[in-house]
Length: 116
Image (cartoon, rainbow, N blue to C red; front, side, top):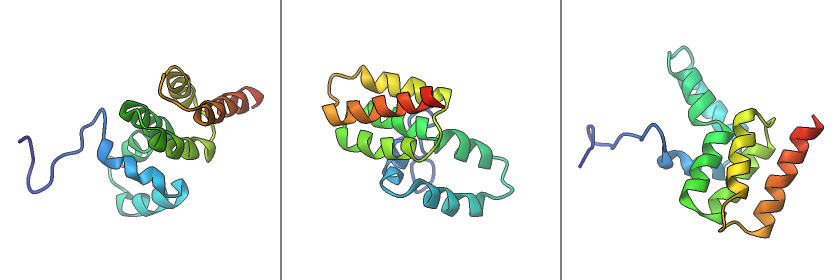
């Protein structure tokens, strides 16, 4: 079934198993994860790429779920908007399934980036 040991591996491009982390405060999640990873050669990649707000927004968009999109937007709102987040916000806005509320929150983040 494609498992490695007792637990299945997290898919590198779409680590959907990590998506529930957006239901928690971003700073708290990062603090909990960074401590055991301190000194690991993978720490920067995990925190900087896999747990980046853009990655969470990409996964939420992939699921086509308003629930996950709203939670991922919380992570974007709690950080500065990078080019990666900008691209993911634009991608989210193109989705036909998003609600007006999600659309306005995404637009607000894009405007916040323009103001900075």
